[in-house]
Length: 326
Image (cartoon, rainbow, N blue to C red; front, side, top):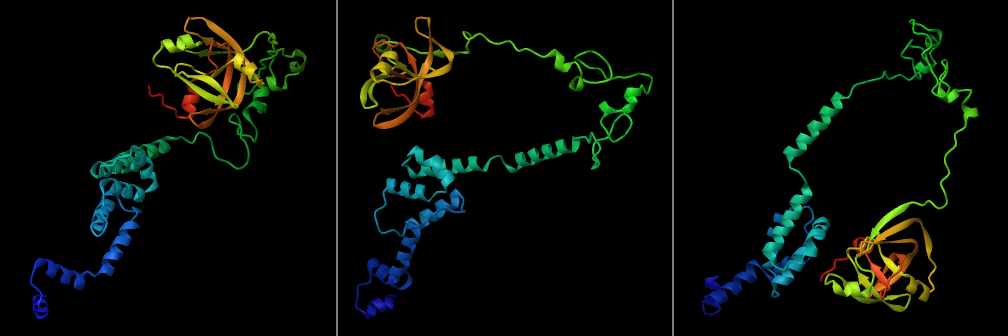
C-alpha cells in the first residue's frame, strides 16, 4: 500500500492510507450490503443478547447520523411480536434501558427454569401413579358388585330375595316401602310436587353505589370530573365517577331525548352519599356516546339526577380501560 502511494506521488498520510485500504478490502458495495442488512434486521429466533450484538455490529456501517431515539425505534421494530407488545407501550428512548427491558420481557416469557419445570413434571407423574383402578375395565356392560352378574347392584335378584340374611335392602324414599326405588315408585305420580309461586311484587334485588347525584355534590369533591359529551347529537353534562358501580342517566335526559328504556328484571338499590337508597328498575341498553372525540357503547341505568345528565361509572371505565388522571 505504501509503494502504491509512492508510485502515484501521493502524500503518505493516514487519511490517504485509509481511503486506499477501504477501496481494496471494503468497497462501497460491501458497505451497502451491510446497511441493507441492518435496515432489514429482525430478531427472529435469536435471543435478545444475540439480537443486540448483531444490531450494534451492523449499525456501525450506517452512513446516516443515528440518533438515540431512532436507534430505539429501529430496535423495537425488530423485536419478536410477544416482546414488542411488552416493550413498545413503555416508550423508552434510552437504548441501554430499552435493552434491559427487552431482556426482562424475554425472561418472563420463558417461564420457570428447568428445575421448576422438572419438579412440576414429577408431581404430575406421581399423581397419575397414585390413581387407583377402582372398577374393572370391561367391554361387556355393567357388572353387579353383589353377585357378579350382568346387571347393576340395585337390580340384583339376590337383594330382592334376601341373600345373606338381610332381606330386601331396596327401599323407596317416597313411600318408604321396600322392593323398589324412588324413580319407579307407583305412588310418585299421585303425590305431585307443588312449587311455591312467587308473588308478582317480589323481584330480585341488586346493590349499586354512586358518589354524587347532583352537580353540587360533584363540584364539592376534587376527585370527580365534569365533562360535556355528545349523546345522540345532543350535548350533555357527564360526570366521571370511579366510585359509582354502574353508569346512570337522569330521568329528565331520558324524556328530553325520547329514549326507550328496558326493564332491568330486577330492582337496583343504589346507595347515595346521604346514606339513603334510591330504587330503579329501568335501563337504556347499548347507548352510543361520544367522549373526547371517541364513540363508546354503554348501558345507562335510569336514576333521578339533579343537574347531571349522565354518570359514567366503573363498569364503563373498566370495560374501556379508562384511567382518570386528576
